[in-house]
Length: 124
Image (cartoon, rainbow, N blue to C red):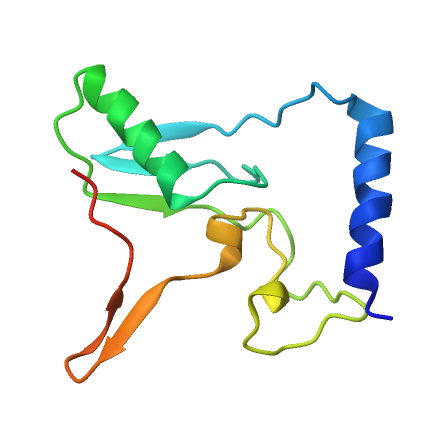
């Protein structure tokens, strides 16, 4: 049996015991020269592009004119962390384990004759 699925149950149970069902993990953002940056170790299970769009929209309502890019610091964990049972396939469930998970550590791209480009909708 691949341990990932069973470990999620054990991890979820332990997290509920430790923090309770109402706990939320904060994600800290800061702006540096028009770049939205997620702090080291910022971790939210469902931090996806749509959530980042909401953050940018909130900042715009507060007076921000533009964001040149989004940066993320995932250096909290050592790069050589080995997880028993994890393989290195191209499947989304084999995404690297990092201190920062955005879009489930996957990317959405379109490949065409012109090359490869992001399949994410452009923020307004």
